Structure formats: C-alpha cells, structure tokens
Image (cartoon, rainbow, N blue to C red; front, side, top):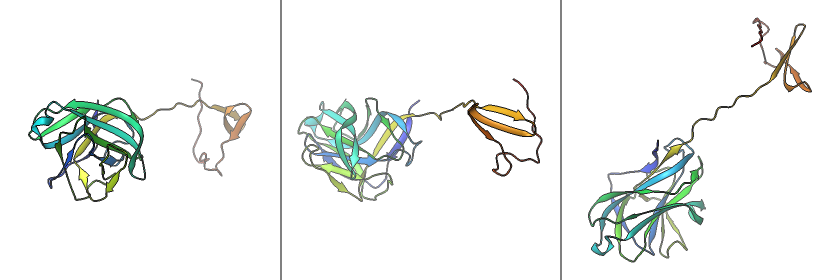
Length: 208
C-alpha cells in the first residue's frame, strides 16, 4: 500500500505562480523522512488560487534526476491532472512508475500547459533537509536554486520490502574440528581464535 514518503508542509505561507514557461518545484531525497527507496505512485501540491482562465488547464508534475541540485535529463516519472477551481485546494497527481533510490536527490517540478497562472504554496524557512526550492523562467532550460525556500509537497509511494536471503553452506566435522564452505573445494575451519565459535560451548549436530 502506498504511503507518504517525502514531504514538506508548513503554517508559514509564501506563494508562487506557475504556468507553461514558469516552472517551480522542490528537490527531495528518499530516506530523509520516509522509508528509503520506494516506487513512486503519486504526488501532491497545494494550490492557493488560480486565474479563472486556468480552470480546465492541465497541471503536470514531473520527477527528474538532479545534478548540482538542479533537474537534469528526461523526466523519470510524470503525471497530469486538470485544474478544477480558482480557490484553495490540494491536487493529488498519479505518477508513472519509477524507482527512487534512498539517499539520491531528485527534483519534483510542476507546470501548466498554457500561459494561465495557478498559485502554489510554500514558505521561506528552509525547513526540509532533503532538498530545496527550484525554479525555471524558460520551461526547464535553465534552473535557479532558492536555498531558503520550499514549496509544500508530498511524494507518495510503495516502499520496498526487506530482502531475505538464504545461503546454503556445507558443514564438515572431522575429529574435534569443524569446517564450513560453499563446496568441498572451498572449506574453512571454524576457529575460536577467529571468533567463529566459542570452544566453551558444546556443539551439537544432526541430519535434517
């Protein structure tokens, strides 16, 4: 089940417009607040207001890899939704599948398909440790980092389960010695000196 992985929310509100050429967003790092690596499922952004002409426009969210804290390359994941009203609301945007790695910084970017504006919320408190505010005035060609700003956002996804590995090894008894290995050509003696075993404890063996 998807859960909230990385996010930033705040009571102190600043606002910024986005449109088809003015793109804004935030970098984020899986594992800062969430479970670590995960498969993204959706994102949320918080609209304070919108021009009447923007209602019905397409709002796009895109996740990029980063270089130097700025988006780079093609989008790793994208999603769209329709602008529904001129008032305050939260948009949850379903994203295409992408795996986001723990400790790696990504960029979450929002923009419209036309020149109408919507206003998104954030603040200037530098409150999220895993990234910062980014903006482009030319539809993603060039980017500026605003180190003390954040937009309000949420990234949701499915965390990866802990991997379980089973390794089979040979155990070989000879007199008062015990050996182990992956096969008969790669056998190592268990020794007390190497802290493999404690000779103070009795060893019992049985055939399963």
